[in-house]
Image (cartoon, rainbow, N blue to C red):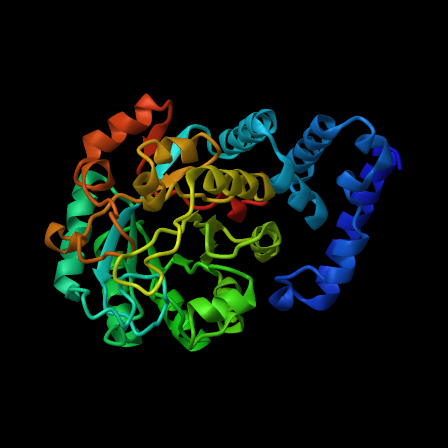
Length: 406
């Protein structure tokens, strides 16, 4: 098949996909049908391209991904398994240029408030899971949360990210009161929640109270592994929560961990496909990092190289997405934050939590919360980001995916 014919087939499949989505309905369209994926033109199967060698194949795949913002699953698998240093250089340049196209050199700063480390969940990898008896538990009061917001506002923050374990104390009425108080006091600010799985009705009430964004990592689409990581939970529940958030009009954040035990390239492509089809407005990806007080303490942590490859691929698949350079990136490597920004990340979330509790929100070993990870160290943060060639922006910074005109 010629390259031109292949491109024509890609275009025809894009049209077919749109029609399939219309008929099926967006609420269930998180996975693309297996039949559709198998039919789709794969560059790595094209005999004329194969004849020109591996380097040519990866160049054509990367160029196609840059222009089309999608590939067949087979081509994504091929690229992840075969990309070399020259290919990575090209891929990273392309993903960075897409970030620059839609966001310029802006890096949005969000004020992170870790307001409770009580959690009813059993996640094996997490240092604040319900079974960790060594965790020093804390729960901020409404007044303490508002004090964090006040400190952040004085520094110039316009987005507050309230993150916590699944704490049964924070029922809807408690969260609604907190959210409404923040929105009333700080006009024009954005409120993001990251508080786990809740019912549709709960998400609806919180949305009506003024919550703008919700972060809920799907973690892995490998259902067997998901169940192993969360023995009392199901991936289907997590998926439905994300679909409900989308239905309710939240800017919705999904994401996964890099370097989980037994993970395969096919699993990574499943995660990428899930995010692409969900059309997540935000994507949080970071390396899996062990915690000494969990049953997974002896497993190997994820690495920087694979993580930035995944971040780059997400930017290529969703050019207008908000993509954080996570704390975990800076934890596994002193150059982690820069590496993330250099492949297309455009958000960082410095910590506004009370300093006496930051060490207690211990999701993984050696989690950074001071220095340039601290929201109060604003000059350090600005200097670091500017040194890398970027510009800090403390505006709301909504996802460009909301703007269909660009």
